[in-house]
Length: 111
Length: 287
Image (cartoon, rainbow over all chains, first blue to last red; front, side, top):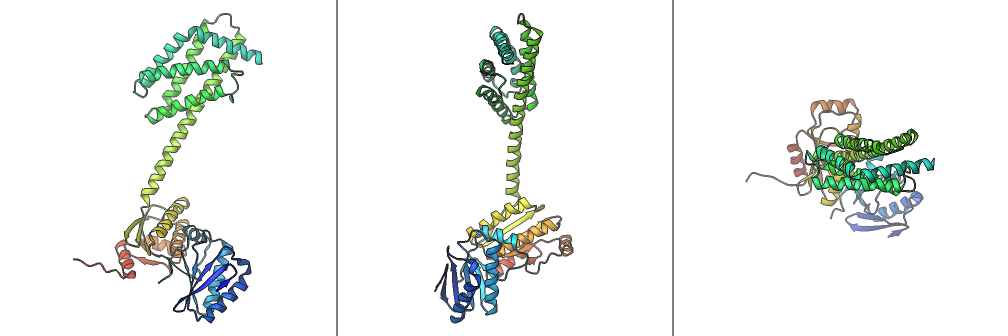
């Protein structure tokens, strides 16, 4: 399923992979979260991987988007796991975080 | 003013040309005493150096404005002393020796003025002021080179120390160890984190064991950096295990209100490795 600026794919066993693209507009956060959550619920998702391989830096604005999405996922009983976070992004985000994030992290999608 | 400068230059050029042999011989002899005695420069190098210096000095005096410190001739003279200084320092020479030698050159030139005929006190004063200014600039140039060289050495030593002080080792497939010795200041944390996160990405490391046995004391800044490092490791998707926390460090962390609730800790590096293996379903048995 393609949403504006991101791609959400069912990868089996209630798991989904969210791949943001260059056209992702996090300013449209509420609309994006509504669409993603609708799709996750429809697909009876229990886990969503968020692919961060193309995100070299995570700033306050991008973290706010990740945080909002992760909390919304928790509300519908879906675990959000960020994968392929770049060293530069992890470095930048570790300086922003005051508490553990609402999402989990993994090196890659667990096959 | 320009007329005075030209006169100063022409008097000096005349003296140099007339006394070239004596001046050259004198500064060459002293050069061999000061720089050749400790084998810093060979006899041929000192001879070449003296000739080059005199040629550069004449070129400067013959230039449009010998007082112009932005002229190519002045710049050439500066580069000459700068290079000589670097060459000597690399060979283990002392900057004091070179400075003494430059002062000797100045003295030799001033002494040679004694042979100049019909030089008014005013011209003599101008010449002395000019030589003093010129040689002071050359000494400054030598000190700049000395400081540059020292800074480069210190930087290289610091880099080497940083490299050896934080060795990141892949002790098992997917398990990295990072023994931290000493204190973690901001710049060191940045370097360690950069290296560690890149290694996690490159090796796809599942677990990082950070050993603090070598950390003798901890303050709020260091503990903050430690938590940042653990957080960055976890964000990359790896597990962080902190080992070797001394009782006084544990007490300090508590009094600093640092929450290690989300951090896996083990008493020793060995325990930390066992925990890493357990998580990866690896069993190590005696053969």
